Image (cartoon, rainbow, N blue to C red; front, top):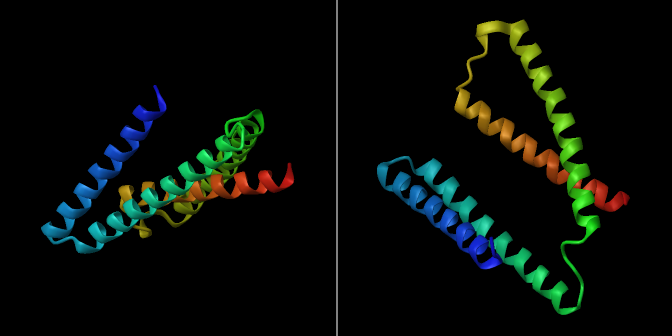
Length: 132
């Protein structure tokens, strides 16, 4: 896959999410639609900033995809999955202890788990970036 195809897929995905957000706003679920639309705008902004940084590094003659980047990403992924597995085990333990008194929509729980996992990954990446 070329960079232009990857960029096209990213923008098509963002456009699809923006369309879903607008549809949800018109349907009456304005809080979800607004949140999703703000997320799409933030993701598009961060994509542009990332592309600008990559172009700037390439103009300086640097390789933005060197071995250090892959090492940091691997360390962060490994650490975040280990931390996430421990957190999930604790959630299951707490859920087992309190039983059915805790009512959670499974889709909300999946969203929360995904948010936590991505937050741990980003934090681990920046930690290893400072450490190495």
